[in-house]
Length: 87
Ligand SMILES: [Zn+2]
Image 1 (cartoon, rainbow, N blue to C red):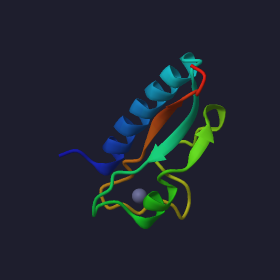
Image 2 (cartoon, protein in one colour):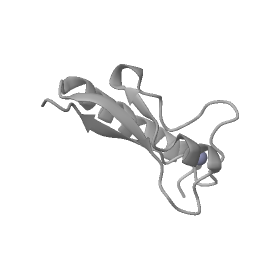
Image 3 (cartoon, protein in one colour):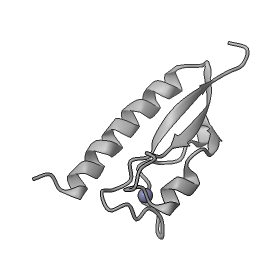
Image 4 (tube, protein in one colour):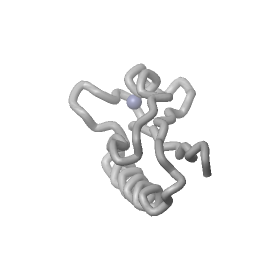
C-alpha cells in the first residue's frame, strides 16, 4: 500500500527531473502551474493553478508550504512549459 509520503517522494523526484529538463531548454522562458481539475483538488491548489513564473523562479512542487495544500490525496500540481514567442 503506497503511503502519501511515498507519493510525495515520487512526485518530488518527477518534478526535479522535469525542472532540470526545463532549465536545459533555452526556448522555455516561463512556466505555469497546472492543478488537476477534479473534486480531489483543494482550494489552495486551484488558486495557484494558472499562475505564471519566470523559469528561474519556478515554484517548488508538489506544494508543501505551511498552510498550503490540503488535498486529501496530496498535491498533484505540475509545471507546464511556456515557449518564447520568437522561437
Ligand atoms: Zn492541494
